[in-house]
Image (tube, rainbow, N blue to C red):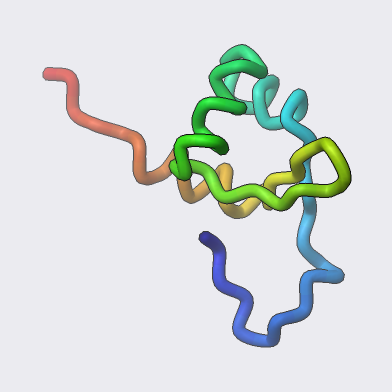
Length: 68
């Protein structure tokens, strides 16, 4: 999960599951699987989830592998 040394989340950008799916070019169900599987940290707000944009970027950065 992204670490904020000051603990201040006021400048953090939270994304919906649909926004994360569009950003990653996958289905919303894939994002829900990542969240429920613990691979992508998320915050629960009522019945929906919010994901820090920084966490999405970290996940994508760490998911690259050499396919050659």
